Length: 166
Image (cartoon, rainbow, N blue to C red; front, side):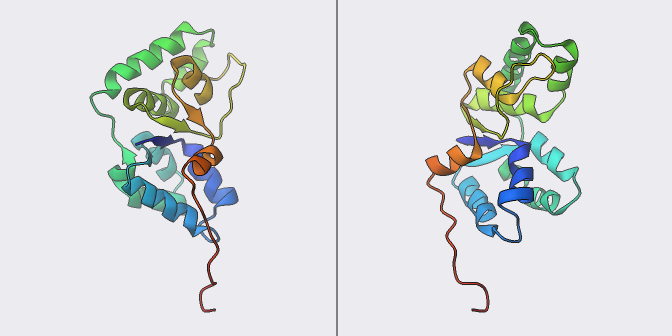
């Protein structure tokens, strides 16, 4: 995969700009780009989405392991590198413990192991209370961009067609 998507990409897309009911092209684009090996995510992100028990959970379940990748052998040493990086920073112990228990840790590790770009709505923050994905990516030299930058790089186009029944 070229891009690995954070949980907040799916949640904000559904809740804000790309709702299933009025922008199905976004979701179709994700599926098509996943089939082409360009866009995906990880199983821990799927777990977070499925926990919501809503239409987004159903969408995630329907995508399975082809979209939400399982950790593989190269991810194991990357987990160690990401963990060591987090422990070597000035973050509070609670921030490190939380980071190591959530999908963010696995997402950054998978991206590090497979030279992917992380896609997230998070922005870097100068805080010791929470490890933000972009801060971890910067510290580990993993590319990290917004979904809008990804869509532009990939020249995504969501063009209006004729309404159904017209």
